[in-house]
Length: 404
Image 1 (tube, rainbow, N blue to C red):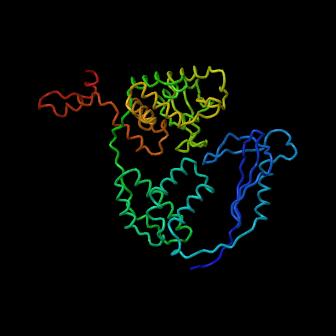
Image 2: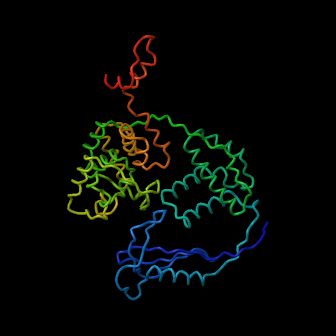
Image 3: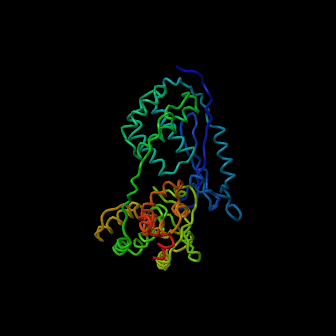
């Protein structure tokens, strides 16, 4: 049942695309006839060194006089406005909620995140997997007005208290929240669904320091050895390691600035969305300094861990080389991410949990808390013994225990 018509205005945005011939401005827009794009012309721009919240590069007018035919950011924005002003405007029909399926609402939510909100490529893939593997097969053809908290809760219970159930509910809530804002439903039924409590055993399997050294010795190259050691002694994620530039290594202050994450061919901000600083122990500093003596690819804006022909490493190939090195070292198979867990488990023995949280870039200190099980308990038994001492026996104090 159709309720009303509304005017749908054309929308669009600009992109700077780098080619061998130079940078070019592309206009991308959507109007009544669908999606379009065109090349506006050569771009007279330079990088600002800053990124949007979603990790996109920002640009400003290049230095010096502008050559004829080139476009500054203001010029390109003016051209886009002219395109949108002449693009056809459609009258779209708003249908009754009864005819809207969950699949339609979910795809609109996903498309909005991908195009308007500029979600990171890794986040897009994550959401796509949740939709295709879980939500759409179960609720895709259901009218959103037919969804109830009871039905969602019952289905969610099939997953148990797992990370998957937590993620699926989070995505479903977001989709239906947008439907409420658009007037397609009055209330979000997923809000009334009990959020599953995910319990972690806290038993993380990590390599010992001796095993880390064996892994480094078994690396296929000097660079791979440096990556494995840096991962274990700084706690950087794989994409953060691949995204490191030489200007991020501060040898004087013995620190590494984690400014970016490279994932699925896209440079973005770290997972937390914030730049952080991680201490660089002498062993890592010496290893990176030696790596910096190579003949090529040592400029400030070049990757520390570089591909064979320059540019960023293939993170998937790195993961495979890591697995091969572990096999050569006759170590049990653990994921690359376990090197980060090694750092957390070791760091919590020498620093406060807040420091470790900051170094690892955890948004929630509960995530850091998983490493507390690895904190040394040496001396705790002797300290507690005083509480169980027979009557009349001298009770040891913490200082007595330390002295002993």
